[in-house]
Length: 292
Ligand SMILES: Nc1ncnc2c1ncn2[C@@H]1O[C@H](COP(=O)(O)OP(=O)(O)O)[C@@H](O)[C@H]1O
Ligand SMILES: [Mg+2]
Image (cartoon, rainbow, N blue to C red; front, side, top):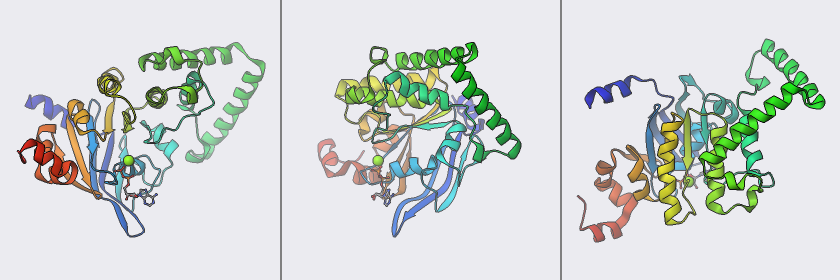
């Protein structure tokens, strides 16, 4: 057991946050946040509404810049980089408010993500690469126009990849339906398929079970664990339903008012008085006869 733990600790983190803080005006949305995700980790981030969970995701993925502290992805410092640049280093996410191309089919939503993966972004690269990139784009344009065999083969490969991800997420039957016509739970799963399309090494899921019924939620949690194993990911899940996240996560970080008030195994966190007070409230204490 300890040998396993030791080998995990020595693996370099794929995603690391050190002393990350962000302030909006006078509001300290996140203070001195620390996190390390390695391949195979399945971690949870919980806390009451407004605790700073989504803000943490936004800082980790480059949507917001931290006021203090450092974020590293695959060993590289990413402070100041744009979300798509950070995505290219292997970090993908879903959003609390679903963001899909609503008028595109389920398949095309995932294909767009698969296509974006590996694409070069000129402004993040040197001059030589910029030129090569320009030439590549020019060639791609002609290949597309002439529908060359190479282009057609690439298209088929993208379609295969996207179909596979739809299948993994239980959405094959929705392949040709517009995203906006999918039931809510399926839209959430499509978002995950799309995130996987960018071939991440770390997946951040912001309340992936929100709006689902009890059965869908339970199934999704099992699926998340399977994704972690099959895609060899590190996963961080924000979930409002504490019971759900405790069922699958090995380590949980609890935020309250932007501060990390607890971190540890589910059992440890569940019996932490600060967590009970902040997160579960008096109703939990009453129904469970006080803190353990
Ligand atoms: N862009 C922003 N500008 C100002 N305040 C923000 C912004 N984003 C989040 N906040 C505030 O930061 C706090 C944490 O929000 P959030 O991270 O969304 O909480 P959670 O996801 O834990 O419910 C809230 O008080 C929220 O209003
Ligand atoms: Mg949130």
